Image 1 (spheres, rainbow, N blue to C red):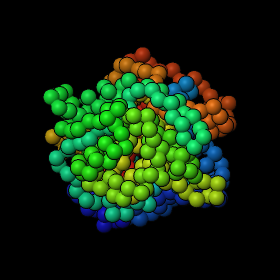
Image 2 (tube, rainbow, N blue to C red):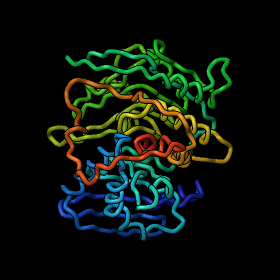
Image 3 (spheres, rainbow, N blue to C red):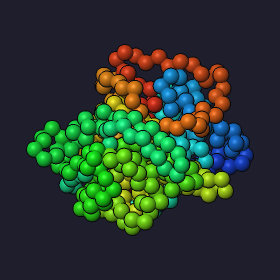
Length: 394
């Protein structure tokens, strides 16, 4: 890992550090690897307690109603504060290997009492699929394929019915990102498959063209432990399950960046037997994608369109911005009020039974209303922090 960090730091001119976290039974530990040193830290806390605190923060981040900063500060003090002194002063990017329920919390949303971690560092996740993906250089010619579902659908799968709300901002999102046909408004030259053109056959045919950027804006349903019921909603109202994707070997081969602009695409949970089940993001890496940008929870339709267009504009600029810097820049723009519109539509699927998030008990002291400034309607981490970057962040 040190050799990889030295190579990445030299090629990007950004000091890069890797942090491995471990939620143990009686303590939290972290291994900090820099290009020149290896050190460790430990915090005495029961693993059950830390996992519970992380779960509460995840629940608070999933709604803009409550202020998540006290809970984010609590996790910051346990997870990040002990290792902060181990980081070189010129650290720009932190690569995180997260353990336990920390995997469901965006580290960019941890708060030191004054600012979020996103305001200090690029934060990138690396997983079991990333051992050989961190050092290769990326393709300089950004051509892409966009897939989107903007219309409402009723989905029936395995005896269950899901209601997929219309996502009107998907059309705007894709138009801002991709130059399609005679359009010159977008950023990247591309092919776009929207709504009825976004079929399974159409998607597979376009992916065979091996364009380096693939962007999917739709709904996604993650069912822990059941890949046959975890699915991407296609534009024609049909589904593409994780089970089906696994049968398509090298589905995302040649894709440098796969952006999953949908809900819970970064989710990864254990099934009833404790076996860890791959979410869409890690499966996509195993099927060939070099880097994946994905979401930890259902996302706001309108703010996501704004964040994505800002991300691609920065990433496609001539100033050498990488994926991690571009994502951080877009997140800070939402945090600090550079966007002025809001929408109530979410990229999620709903059903009759209670959601897992509603079963999580929150300490009453943490249920303080969040007051958004009129000049920064997307300042709550609910809007900007769910998207995480996994894999080759260059």
